[in-house]
Image (tube, rainbow, N blue to C red):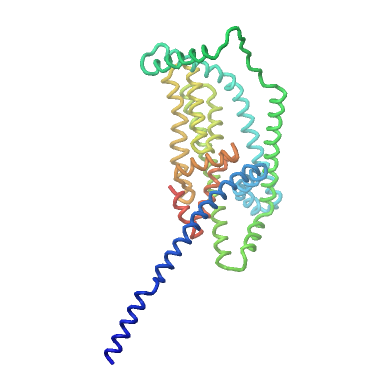
Length: 390
């Protein structure tokens, strides 16, 4: 019996040893099957991003008013709610809120245009003077920059000598036809005004309907209580963050504009009110708006004082105001929910600016803040929210 059982055990061992490795083959097949799937997934994600960017760019005339009106409705919702608590009908409160936005925007635009006309008249002179100073410095200075300039001049002369033909007269470039330029400018202005009108009407309808779309969206989520609860949490968080964002941005931009105007006033820089209004408006574009104003203030101060030191001092006023108030204080007031690292902010500015132009630069931060909130509430997308955080 012992011998028979021993032979049976040896047969089982040999059978196991000679049998094909099922687990190993299944694991190998799984790895082989998973490799193309991952490659396909990356390719599909890349195609989806490219197709989405193209679709957003192609449908900019539709998407820009819709997205802008949604965020504007979030910003004005507390005003309409306060009026409703004072027994003002919601439709009338929505009209009053939209009229308030129109009045404030009209006053700001009028003041900006009145001051901008003088600045725009002086801007070409400032650029010409700066160019003259740079060329004088290059001509009188010594060092590598002068040698590079001389080399470039010699190469340009050599290229002109080899390409020019004797007796050939150079024909100046024909200027662009004025009627076409005028038509293009008129069409652009008409498109801009149409977008503004669409934004105002959509904002009014969103404010007057209240939470109708929220209820409809909750119904679309199905009968699952967990899904509806998650959707409600996301919508409330998005509304809260966007309301806080627009309130903080409004207060911070006004503070930056006032600080810039006061600082330039004490430095006796011309058009200090205009620069305060300009940075208050452009500061809504993170980093880029303030950088434009800093360069413009420095250039115009150099034209006025003809001193690089005073130009740097004048440019430092909007730089300090936008850094201390516009970045540090705004980041502290927004809270951790809306904070994002600078790489994500710059990347979003590049992407949305490429897709929607100036509107994209303005809407980039609210869109990314909303995306971060949505990612943080979905388990599979939480790593993306962590990647976007500061």
